[in-house]
Amino acid sequence: MHPDIDTIRITEEEIASRVAALGAQITRDYEGKDLILIGVLTGSTLFMADLVRRINIPLSFDFVSVSSYGASSKASGVVKILKDLDEPVESRHVIVVEDVLNPAMARRLAYLLDLLSARKCASIRVCTLLDKPMRRRALGIDLEPDYCGFAVEEEYVVGYGMDYLGRYRSLPYIGTLKPVIYGGG
Image (cartoon, rainbow, N blue to C red):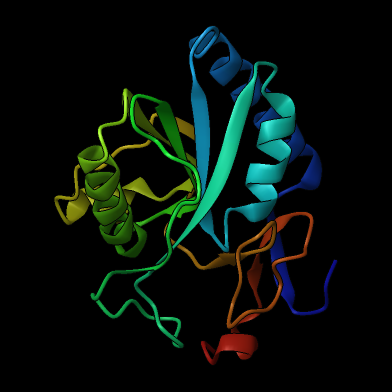
């Protein structure tokens, strides 16, 4: 375990098992359809890479970068596209792949879904590794994932693509940081 990690919340083995199950479900749901997965940079990259290897039908994928944070770790409320898609999505079945769905990310995801909808996709669904539904629902945000790896508590987690100030993305598990790292105790 990395010395900055307080607790491992989801192990590497649990992640691999759940990603395999999501891949099998998506395979069943999209058999015979023109599927494109769109990963939201940068947090989704590890999840997306593992997920596409577990989907056993022809597909393509692309990435988009949507910012609501800027250089800080708190959402600014301003959403903007930093990197747009290279692949066309018109008349295609789209799954947007996110690392975590929480209130801050829900704002940027809603913006992205509206943008994709205007591009006339055949369908749009959301796949997230982590869902933090408690606070999102309490705030009246009705965006729900179609595919979810794990529902988790409202705590700051890192690893498997998720970061704190650009660090810890490469950890193969998901864990919480020691409070001393982020000034929480």
